Amino acid sequence: MNLRVFKKDVDYLVEEIISDAVLGLNFAKESEKEEIIFGVINDAIALRETLYTKINHYDRENTRAYFNGVRREFLEVLDNLFERLSETAR
Image (cartoon, rainbow, N blue to C red):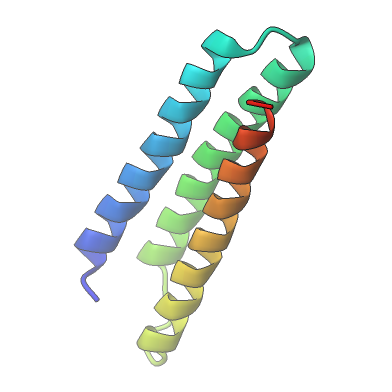
């Protein structure tokens, strides 16, 4: 796995969730929905910062297992963010 490609994937997917959230703000009418959307945006930014820290400071002995875990965690959190965002569309 190439770290540069992984970082680009992280940036792309976090930007996608943020752009979807901003688009969702245009359709949200209740303050409750806006709070959820702003929470998703803040969590997405925190996710990116956390992942960059994990990517830049990793265990050099168990590299493959470490990054498989980081990738799995990233996808789980990202899926959770998309689910939270989709709840506002209902």
